[in-house]
Each structure stands twice: as structure tokens, then as C-alpha cells.
Length: 391
Image (tube, rainbow, N blue to C red):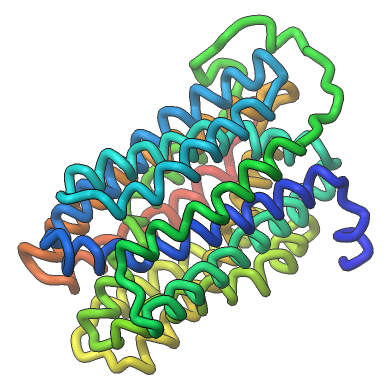
């Protein structure tokens, strides 16, 4: 495995380092967002659900647009650079927001940047390696991305321990943002052949195999239960995890994902991607149902978050490799665009439902709802998607 990793193209490594630095900035702020909304802007779970739902759903639309355009133009770099630029300069502006509505606008800009870069970046990664290396390629990318998610929360915890105000921590995010943009400008795209499928813009699923279309439906059902991770941090805080340990808890998840993401994704190249996803979805259902139980101790919370880290490690790279496997030649960007669109759009109702149930009824029922969605998706994946005949 290590020999294969070392032999991966320069483009794969560069994109990985870009994600590492960018995620350092993003994840330095992410675990602080619910705390900032609650303690500084006096906003609760409902506002959090609206912010994250709208931001992520909007991001998904741009993921489809950029994916289709990159298939048509065969140019991914401009969208990658633009996407990282919007995010890098948008995040620090949260420091001057005086209401949750302004935070919503800023998060929208940040997620719009993510939408512009994600599908072109994923298509570029898929086209830079052979099919037999897609699992390890996307796994390595997600591991490096999550390495940034380890460094970011650790920096946030360090700033908090030094007494740095929350607003000032948001301002510091500009530093890794500038580094991210500089690295993105160094990307060199491999030569591509323009196939007949790229001769016009196509926003439909025409030409996509039946199995991929079914997978989109099932992934959407799973995404309905996969609300913003900020609710997990809010739940941990409500369960008694000290404020200064919240960033450390998030860093621990990212560390697990970093360590196990690459080997698990590489294993999917031979073991099978659908099997990995099925097992991971069961783990997700277990995690969410357990998180909803009352009276959890801090140690139980940490153990459950470890399970969640393994779930992310087993799915983040594998899901993208599976999309690349199903995508027809010349339509990788469009396939990633549709996948990102469906899963991202579902985050809007997912976060709204979760936030409303969490605040208006009880946290337990919000987590049970997510667990049930995962179980339904598991059954459909096992008996419906895997039996679809390719057309």
C-alpha cells in the first residue's frame, strides 16, 4: 500500500495538501460555530439548523453547475482556485457579524466556494489515476483533508486556553486561507481528450446507468438523517463535555479518520465499495441512536465519537470512488455534481428537522430519526441498488 501511495501523481498530492491547509482554517472555526452563535449572537439550535441547511443546500447546487461545466470545458483549475478564494476570504468575516443572519450570509459564501471547487476537484482526482487506484486516491485525499481537521481544532483549543476571544480566532483563519489559494494556483491539469459526450451542456441524468440513479435515491435518504455535525458538538456540550474540550473532541474524530481513511479506502479497491458503505451505514445508525440516549457520561460520548470517526473513515473516500466507478467516461464531473447536489440538498431538510425536533421535542427523538433514515438506506442499498442491471 505504501508503495502505491508514493507512486500517486503530483496532482493528487498537491490537492491533498491544499485540502489539508484549507481544512485547518475551516475546522479551526467549525467546532466554535455553535458556541459562537449561542454565547455571542444568542441563537439556538433552530437558527443553527437554518444556517447549516441553507448553506449546504446552496453549496450543492453549485457543485452540480461546476461539475457539468468542467465536463464541457475540460478545465477544473479555474473553478478550484475560485472556490478556495471565496471560502478563504469569507470565513474570517464571521468575526464582524452582529446577528445570525449575517453568519448565514457568510456561511453561504463559504459553502458557495466549496460548491464551485468540489466536483471539479473530485473529477480531476478521478482522471489523474487508474480505476484500480481510485479508492486509495480518494482515501488519501480525505485523510489529508482530515489531518487539517485535526490541526484546526487543536489550534482553536490552544487559542481558547490562551484566552483569545472567539471573534479573534475567526480572524486568524485568513492565514491558512492565503496559503490555500497560493497552492491552488500551482495545480497543473493533465491533458484530456474531449469526448462526444462533452460537446454540449447537459444538466440531466441522461446517459447515467440505472445503478447510479438508484444510488442517488438511497444516498439522498441516508443524507436526510445525516444533519450538520454541529449538532453532535452541541449534544456533547449538553452532555457535560467542557467547553475547552469540544475542539479536542472534534480533533479526535478527525485524527481517527486521518489514520484509517486511506487504508480502509484502499481496501475497498479489492474488497468492494458497496460492502464498505453498508457496514459503515450500520455503524452510523448505531452511533446516532446511542447518542440520543439520556444520561450518557463524558467517556461514553468520547467512545461514540470514536465510532463516528471510523464511520467517516470508511465512507468519505469510498463513496467518491464508487461515484467515479459508476460514472460514464467523460461525465465524471456531472456524476459528482449530481451526487453532491442530492446529498447536499437533503442536508437542508435534515438540519431543519433535526434542529426543530432537538429544541422543540427532545434530543433523543432527533437522533432516533437520523438512525432510522440510515437503516432504511441500508436496506435499500442492500436489496435495490446492488441488484440494478447496468444500462
